[in-house]
Image (cartoon, rainbow, N blue to C red):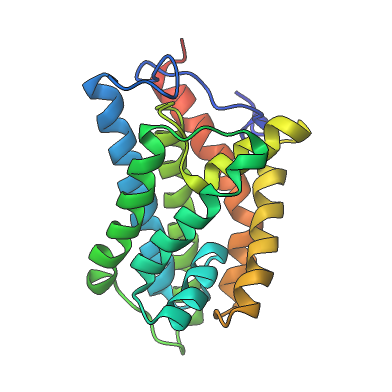
Length: 223
């Protein structure tokens, strides 16, 4: 696989653990395991980004804004955001699966569980904050690649991404980046914190997801 193909992948690959269909109510243990693992990795990546302190990722900015309004933790606010995004699936004719429910619960829970234990660089160590931010973005990309290929239904955010990609036919990286930029604006209007890390995340998460899907495709030895 050439370097450019890592950034232009247009569909979620099939792996040995992929479910035959998203609404499978009796998935294999391996499939459930990989979906759980992928969501845990993604949630951990989000927590790493929050702890870095260089600026929140777009969806967490939105969660922070809602958290301020409802006086709840970022993790629980993330759950609120996930449920709200599911409503946007209706016009896209996206159907939630077992994996969608797992994502909604596990990611939000992982944020609140991991955040207290992660290193938090001081503001005078911007280079370290940015380095931790980049690690968090890469972790999120890998997590997305793992649980999306489970094919038990994407998480709310990725369902929005894949739904728009299916309709527009555009590369996943472009679709995801466009969504993130829009969410940044909405989150900022609600009172969320925007920083340099926000800009970095908005433009790198799309390529990170593409890389994650490509790596999983290679490692799993696609069917």
